[in-house]
View 1: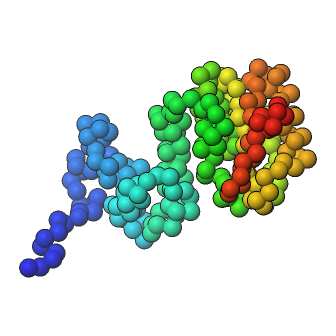
View 2: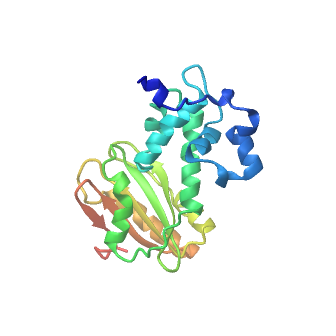
View 3: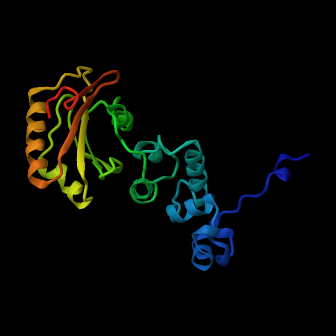
Length: 228
């Protein structure tokens, strides 16, 4: 038996009647009526010389089914036909969903709870400075990358650190950064910025709860060392 006869023919988007195309279907029936594949076709918008929109959406669906944790700009643009604009649109959509739709309601009460939210920066080759806004129940409102530095230095101004926390109406703030060198002890600059953030937090009414430094294997907490 011919294999092709056993496999449903996958029509290209342009081959579908206009009424059955995902964008038009969404307008008529709402987003809930669309399959995951069709939602991705809407997000992608259009194809290009390398791949049509359906082929791009099919690749993306495979990536989504493996989990969104590994989705980033590099992994998306490595897919055939995915443009810079499409990759950034998808990443932005996922980030908005995290911030407003998939809010973590688990209180972050211990150092281990906080460190668990920093796994994504522990193996980075550059220093990432992260700020986490917490509400009065110590639940995460938002986690943001404030700055990305070089191999061994990252700079963060209190203005940048507290700007979004104020908009969030955060009850307190936790900041963290990684040391790609593997040396977990704070530098003089780390201590200086911590003192600046403590002072800014007191002035703004958003106290700094902790400044955490992580490496691949170690953790340093200013709070745990009674330096806050």
